[in-house]
Image (spheres, rainbow, N blue to C red):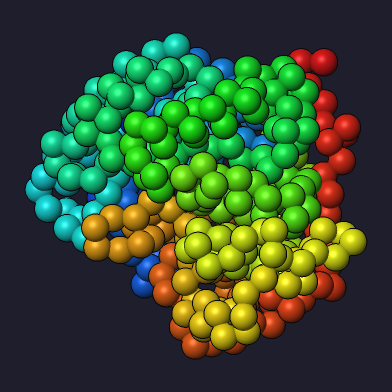
Amino acid sequence: MEPKDFRVGESPEYVRMSLAAAITLGLRSGSFFRGAELYCLNLLLTYNDGCAGKCAYCGLSRSRISRSEWNERSFIRVDWPLFPLSEVVRRVADGVCPHVERACVSMVTHRRAKEDTLKVVESVRSVIEEVSALISPTIISKDWLWSLKNAGVDKVGVAVDAATPELFERLRGRGVGGPHRWEKYWKTVEESVDVFGEFNVGVHLIVGLGETEEEMTHAIQAAYDMGALTHLFSFFPEEGSLLESKPQPPIGSYRRVQLARYLINKGLASCEDMEFDREGRIVGFGVPESVYKEAVESGLPFMTSGCSSRNRENACNRPFSDFTPYQAYIGEMRNYPFKPGRGDIELVKRQLKDYSNTPVKVWIEEVKVADE
C-alpha cells in the first residue's frame, strides 16, 4: 500500500521513519532480502530547518551538498519518508506489525528536540512497551535524561561515532564548524548509565572513519568499562557529504572489529589482552581457541548490534542500512539482520583472516568546512 499525500510537517506531529519501518507498517511497498524481518521501528524527529550538526559523513548534516529539502534527505544510506505520528501509532495499535518488539526515537540537534522527543516517546509508548531513544548530548542534561526515563524510555543510544578525540573533533566538532564535543558525548554516556542502569546504554561507533582496528577496540573497551555496550556501523559514503569519496573499511577489518566488540561486550575478552600488528590490525583476540571458535560458529558477533528486547538480543536489527543489495549478494553483508546460516559463517571465517586490504585511513586534513 502506497502512502497518502500527507502534507509536509514537523515533529512532534510528524516523524520520519526508516524505509524498513515504512515497509513493515505497510506505508511503503517492498520486501527484505532473504526474508529478513524488522523488530524495531526506527523513528526520526524532523524539522524544516534541519539539524544543527555539520558532521562530515552524515546525510542530515548542514554541510551536505544536496538538492533535496532537509526532510527528504537519505540517512545512513536509506530513505526516511515522512508520516504523521498518529498514523504510525494507529497502525501499530491495529496490529499491522505484531512481530515488532521495540521502537527507537532518534533526536536531531535542534532547539525544539528535547520537548518534542518526550512527546513522541509518550505517544509511541502507548502502543509499544519497549522504547529506546537515540539522544543528542549537545543539547541535553542529566535532569532531562530523568524526564526521558519517566516518559517511558528504558534504553538510550549515544552516537559517538568516531573512535578517537582527534577524529571526532575534525569530523564532528571544530574541524567542520560543528557544535559537538568529545568530552560532552562521553560525559553523557556516563550520566546515561547512572540514569538507565548498567548496559542499558548503547554507544554507536562507525568503523572506517580513519581509525585503526586497535583504536576502535580501545573505544569499545572504554564504553564497556563505563557500563555501556557498543553498536557498530560500517562507514558508508553518503552522496553529497564531505566524505562522499571515501571508501568503506575492508570487509576483513570490519569482521575483526565485530568479533572484538562481541567478545568485549560479553565479558569474554579485554582489549588489553588482544594483539595488534604494526598497522593496528587485530592478530589475536586474547581468548582461548575454544572461545574464539564458539563465538564465530554462533554467527552472533556478525549480526546487527543494537538494543535488545525481552525476547531477542538484536531487536534493533536495521536491515541493510550500511551496505548495498549487491554487496549482500556477493557476501559482504556488513551486519546480518538475521542469524547467519552455515554458508554465511564459512564465508565470515575466511573474511576474518583477510588482511589483503589495509584499512584506508581517512586523510582528515582533506575534509573542508562546508562554508569555507
